[in-house]
Amino acid sequence: MSGRISWEGWAVPPGHEAVRAIAAETPDSELIRWVDEALREKSGYTLPPKIHIVQQDGDYYNVMPCIYERGNIAMVKMIGRHSIKRGEDRSSMMGDILLYESDTGILRALMDGEYITTLRTGISAAHSARLFTRPDFETVGLIGLGNIMTVSGRTPTCILSCATPMRRSSAALTWSLPPTSMAGPPFPTRRTATPGRNTSSDAVLAPCAPAWYTENSSAFGRHQENALDFRRLRDMIVQNEKWEVFTMAMIGYVARVLTGVRFKKMNHMIDVVHQKCGQNNVRTFFDMLWCAVRYGAGYYDYTMFGFYNMTGAQRDTYLTRVRNKKVSNLMNDMAHDDDFDDKLLFNVRFAKYLRRPTLNGETATVEQMAGFLEGQEAIFAKINHGSCGNGVEKLYVKDFESPAAMLDYIREKKLVVLEHVQAQHPDMARLHPQSVNTMRICTDLVDGQVHIAYITLKMGRGGGVCDNSGQGGILCRVDIDTGKICSPATDDYFNVYDRHPDTGIPLVGYQLPMIEEAKAMACEAAREIPEVGHVGWDMAIGPDGPAIIEGNDFPGTDLCQLAPFCPEKTGLWPYYKELLHL
Image (cartoon, rainbow, N blue to C red; front, side):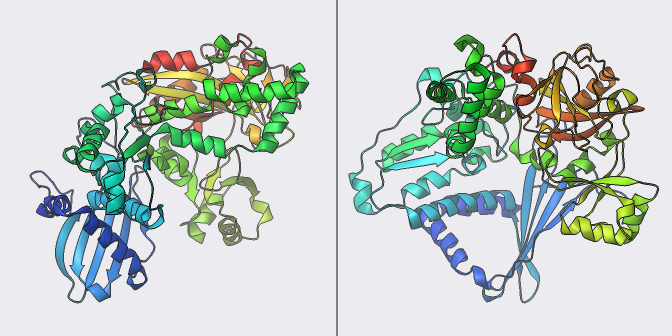
């Protein structure tokens, strides 16, 4: 075969529509029985590890084979993630299932893998509800349904069917929608909602999904004809079963935040506040609780931003932890998380912006490793899913007997993301020569236009090779227009520095090199995956120009709003409210 195949004129296989028709006609109880039977028979399935294939542009396929000999079935599910190009009307995640007769190898069906997988996931939740719920339950909480509601909508009704007939007949219905003031504005048409994306984040503390989400949710997704919005769900329940139902969206995230509170760390923050301003610890504790409820601020937000020394109006200008989650949910499609969180995938997808050789340590041969190390004094090795500078080592070639020995070491330590050391512009290296000092440039892509929210400078200290504050580094605010440092530096221990503590270089007014080139590269990279509009780019400046170190699809709120950076006591929330019309 030579050249590319033309797919013009190819139609959706008839097996896809047949699957949906069968599912629509199948009672909920039968769907649950199928899932129950499959789970009970799991030991009879042969399930090899899935195969992950990455393409040159960073898109990928997952291939999952399976054989069930007792049922005379063999199947292969292939799911791919491919960025949506301009003008295309499709989902970014699509999949298909090939079904064979296992003892003859004859292909019997080609089925819609995305639809079946989503339906299976929802019915599995209903199956779990049947197994683990109390028999006398009255309230059902629906949290983070995402694509399950977009594709099928069967999960809620299946859960409701799990109760005994006596319970169903005696239960009373009360339905709760949030007050209008909490529901937020209609979802703007200029934002494209995609399956898996939480579009209901405006109701941060509301007990159920806001009306503007429910009225628009049925228009989302590849299978919009099968979507079920919450108002129709309410009507179905009123007509068929009597229930009290509360749907919850962002409240799930808030609950995770609250359950993750570490009181030892909270007490430490309260002590820090006392040292900073002498405020009574009890007052600080209750003020932190108030700020959590009123502004969505965590105790780190309260301390790092200096809430203890602000009015309510000033506090209300800050992009707090919960508000930042809201912005990310509105602007970023979670289906693309791996494009940023998976460093190996990121290095493939954004290779032209890295401007340095990289290597996948998971798949590299000894010969490839030897070629990668040739002429290098040292390389950087990172874990694939790390953050805050954790899991990063600078490996010196002289410390290993051979490339094979280094390969064994990085695989044992799971440091499989390998990169040549980024050379630095002299004006960047001068600040702290031992580390690669970077700028965090936060971009926001809205209506095809890229905005820069902030720039901060991250520098190493104490001879460390990492510039991250979580590894002992320090941070400064940078003027977006001039590229000059415009604040003192601070660290994770709330120390403030007018000069770099190691090199002694005065910080405020220091001119960073090639700032316009760095901003231009960040804006160009921001257009690569338009489904992810809110990104923080860590940018090094080499002798010949900027180079991206990594991208963060959940950029921290602290990097740009630390108390020493904002003497005017004004945060980023007004910027995002205007940008996103919140």
